[in-house]
Image 1: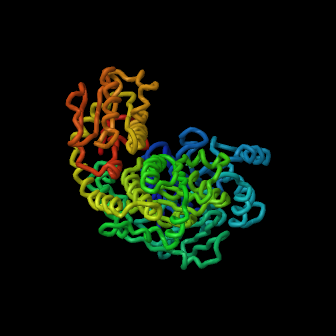
Image 2: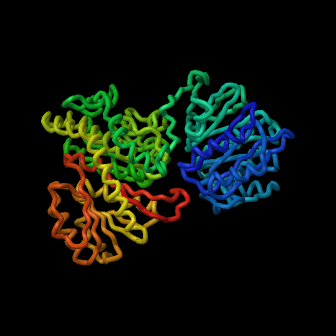
Length: 599
Ligand code: GLU
């Protein structure tokens, strides 16, 4: 996911653009660039491969000045991460454009524009848009009309920001499939991929809808192509608690966010559980009716959210007796699905803008589902706006690339969902009350869990020079093992696989030797003895075992086994005290250094 920032002001905007990019670094990127219009009405461009700091250094040396400009962090999809491919892309020194997304028909457009005499400098799909806009603006003489016409020629997903030398006071932004917000200032206006980028300059935002185009000058904002409501009535004010882009005393955002989990869970539970009951009204006024009618649940999600969905399947089926299917959004949306009567369609996404998940939700609407419910961390996101019901995770902004508090709060929401649904499908008041108590205790248990940090750090150092790892779990902890493996891959670039421990003997056991660390999540539950026999197989092959368990379980007769004891947890709630990995290198620049595992 790349980042876009644009600004039109009376002051020099270079500092605002660079700070904005830095605040979007969490989205992952490989290069950065910006353009500003200088006093002689020339578009000046600066680009650098690598960190935003490299672009800052370039700008520091050149000291550009301009009151209007656009900037970008690129996550390459077409063409290598080189300076030439970095955005902004120019056309004829007149148009400058940045883009987040993918243009699927770029080859045909490239050919057409080449025949018209345009010269391409990059390998990106993006550059076609710069030339197309140049061509169409030249033909009609109007910036907005030219951009609008160009957008009708595009297939794919985009958020763009564009400036034109001949219309020096304005920027145009548009979105279709990628997020874009407008920031409203006093005598200055902005656009960005995420409000986070603009928090130092404004707290008032408009979330653009799909298919909308915004034209802004420093004093005016006009939105086209969407609802006929006034700009002012669409503005929302974010409060200062939403400014998460400060890592305080922590070494990196992921660590900070790991430590924020008890608070995030506390916030997520607030107002949703009473003393002994789950407050199902928290799911919305129509929730009762939908939950009562529901005969099955279909969950669709990507990445980490998909793993939360897999945990939820255990909860939903155990607490409601209804069937629950879970599928990866990018698979679900491209196949013909059979919809059982009265199936509730659920989506899970941290950002609420995950493209495949959003597309799946949109597709579900014509397939006869009972209704849609999303669990999401961003209140004004597309997923929330387009779902019948939504339940927020109250994790606050998550800056770290690998999900931590958004994942655990998602799990808390999902357990509450399974309980709320269960109330209409046979969940006994006794079990409800027992689980509510376990949820009340959860933030405290997580605080205790964080105390094992030093032990985990010591383990992590032992992983630094490994090339592979296996993560095992059974039952509710199998998806947790898969999430652990994903975290290790994502953050440390060490290959890892998550496996159901019972499957080990059907193949992967052959890979286990002294070089293969095996991490297992094995708290006391009805599957513990089975997990132990699976781990005996690992020990017999000389594999080093790293086991997360609790006081009641005994691993003393295991050789070459290290154990971390977790605080006592109700077996249903245990997956929420989850395994994480962290690493002290930049998650986006990815050189492996010390890899640290954390609960
Ligand atoms: N597809 C464009 C490129 O490769 C934009 C990628 C992005 O979203 O950063 O340059």
